[in-house]
Length: 325
Image (cartoon, rainbow, N blue to C red; front, side, top):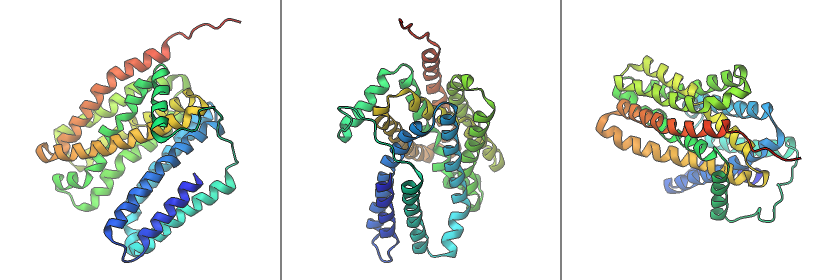
């Protein structure tokens, strides 16, 4: 994680240098995203070593709330910061945040050795294949993986926010509201779920919440106005808090020596699904409009979620084999 932070800081500093060609900036930005993958995988694999039981679920919820809150602040303040201080200085400040993260990790996170296994060190593709095999071998996790990938269908409102605002005839000042509404909903949903829903009930809610997140988006087919859209996105975002439970189930169900491979596969799968989802949604929106595209994606997500939810619930309610003494 420290090495990833240092690499990210170096790439952002490169972007902050005046006169750097746009091609180099794009490659550096892609590099930051690339390095972020191993960082997130290591962080998700480390968290179950630090927290356990309810504390682990609460930790994941706090992580999601923190990320989404930072995203909301970024939408609200990012443009203002860049306007007040030139973009190059803003990027330099961004590089300092990666250095601060590396320093916090070095000073504040106790050292823990990686889980040992004879075949623990694997090449990239071998690690991905191993992670896929681990997921396939644990009852319920394949269905849960499918529910996690629905993020690729539910990302449309954020990816198409600018076009959607123009379609509704609103000013560009409202783009941040459209992009931030799902994140705000997820913050509230994650807090409510961990605060008021009993632990034994949460796992049974994963499937229904995944379906409802899509069903709510189907209301966009009615071509609602801005305030109705914000309400729809907020409620759908509340239901997407099920993703916190997906991460918790993966973290607690996989062996320690395979956890990084599994969590890395889950994380990279979600990011890939989101990228592909925005690309396809953008193409479809040219033909049917953004609102209809979001509604179609929601309907497709709800349809996919139903059989996956049934499979997951069957796995979680199946009687465990008795063990002899």
